[in-house]
Amino acid sequence: MLKTSVLCGGTSGAKIVGGLYRNKIEVNAIVNTADDEYFLGLYVSPDFDSVIYSLAGIFDFKKNWGIVGDTFNAYEMLKTMKVEPYIMLGDRDLAVHIYRTYLLKSGLKLTDVFEKILKAFGLNVKVAPPSDSRLKTMIGLSSGEISFEEYYVKRIEDSIKYLRIDGSGHARASEKALEIIDESEILIVAPSNPLASIFPIISVKDLREKIKNFNGKRVAISPFKGGVTYKGPASKMMRDLGIGPEPRGIIKIYDGLIDYLIVDTNDYKENERIIEGVKIIPSDITINEDKDVIRLYNTILNL
Image 1 (cartoon, rainbow, N blue to C red):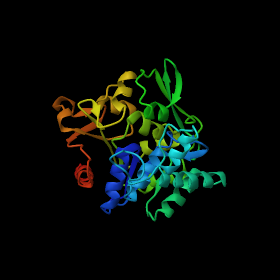
Image 2 (cartoon, helix red, strand yellow; image 1 turned 180 degrees about the vertical axis):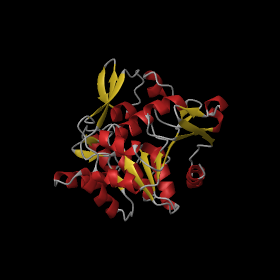
Image 3 (cartoon, rainbow, N blue to C red; image 1 turned 45 degrees about the vertical axis):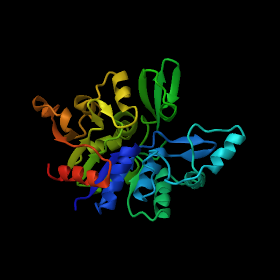
């Protein structure tokens, strides 16, 4: 089986990585960390946790966050003390945040913290941050600037004026992320939010160069069906910024980093089989279950 790496974030990324792993595909992942935030002193890494929980078979896909069956006693107690973080943190989820914060405060790099948590869950897979430096996606609104995590969780409807990745200018790729790319024969860009989940990863310059010079297949999966996503604000964000939520818009964001783009069959156009050198492949991009992930993976193997 071909060694596969996945660039990802969010629920869709968690589904892809988890589905491949459970079907014995040799998969590793580079996960967006630009949504990471401190809540009440705890370092929370939403996209990494989604991938970890999916790999461990405990991710709550009905809520699209957290651990299935988790309780919220600590959160309810915080509310009685008039302290209510805008993200609901479950009790078991909190344990992970506490452990991660402890490891970071002990002086470990983010890469090493990821490895410790993977080991704690008994997972034999590599999941790396794009950089050990702090990255943060900032959203510009007419009312001011906020983090993407706050924009997303609070479901803010104001139009986006700009998006920038704090820290990407001086960030160096983590050694583990570069190692994952070097060891891979297939590189998949998950159907995650192209701006909020994937752009922070490819904004790290030396990691972008590594992907640009990758010798294997580089395949992105579109998150859009008819210009909208299954969940999340990706289509609105792209429209706000003047980038259409369509194949051409995705290719513009992933400029020079992909060879193939898998799109929903209904979005495929015969006169746009190749866009800016990228081959457009029609398929059913639904990923409700692991069997859907494997069907998509087989499409990639058959390219």
